Length: 373
Image 1 (tube, rainbow, N blue to C red):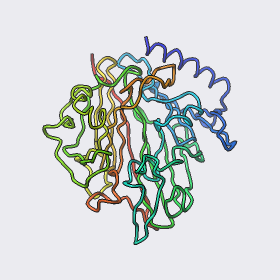
Image 2 (image 1 turned 180 degrees about the horizontal axis):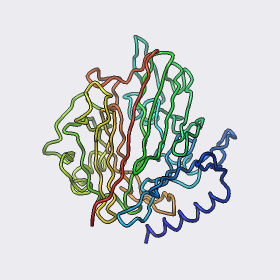
Image 3 (image 1 turned 90 degrees about the vertical axis):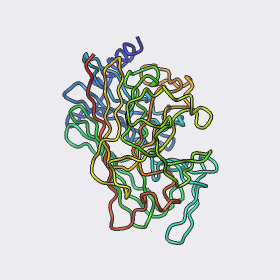
């Protein structure tokens, strides 16, 4: 019944969008609410020929909905998100947003670059996380429609924003392809600055409930060790013999209880096998996620060297998303493609420093298929 409720909600919101949205080159756009500074946010709807649909907004360059057919052709929204801008503004969960200037953690909210120390907001005290108090997820981006299938969002982060050096020009492009959603990131800077961009979508291939029965495979034989506050120690260990070993398929909930005391679930960065330790490279398969009841299969390909597995450990049922679905603990799983957390303090990790004249480039593809019953 939850999937039926979401389908009904989808039909209603789709009818409303058709009635009120202005259409440009096949992509619908509609108002999505007013920000605190008076700026108007916009939501964009992209439709695919296979029935898939993606919704993105210029607030945080955020993926708000992603409707994918199951093995019988029935649609469900497979990412967690909200129907109102106000919910994104209030939420602490970075739902579907672009994170930056540096995604994930920076220890003690400070770093030294080229002999100068920089102090950042300790928004996960005493550490810095996901770009600070007003990271990229809380900014309004400039939108450009590209053909019938893509929306590009651009943002200029000024020198000193959230404590980071240099002016950074960033573009994030969402492209709905046949059976896939592709995200391309580019960035340039006028001074040396750290950059680690990622998307923070939570996936639930059933459209409701928890992801504990989803089956996950990770192409990662190693992970970065962390201390009690989830800051990397600089060491890399093998997953063999631990609950982090997803080199063969396992249910997400199969061994999660072993992690309750340390992190209340999965919240770990994995070192991907196919991407060079130097960071960046060619597109490679990183993960496969399946949901047995619907038959939906998600494969994630990326050029990034790492992936954060996070199982929505702090959801408690008090947050309601698209279609009225309640987000209980483990309602979604984030599979964040990234460079490693706290890379600025660990020279052995792939560097996240972007220098003038260079261009940061990253690509992640979410590819959908179905399994036979």
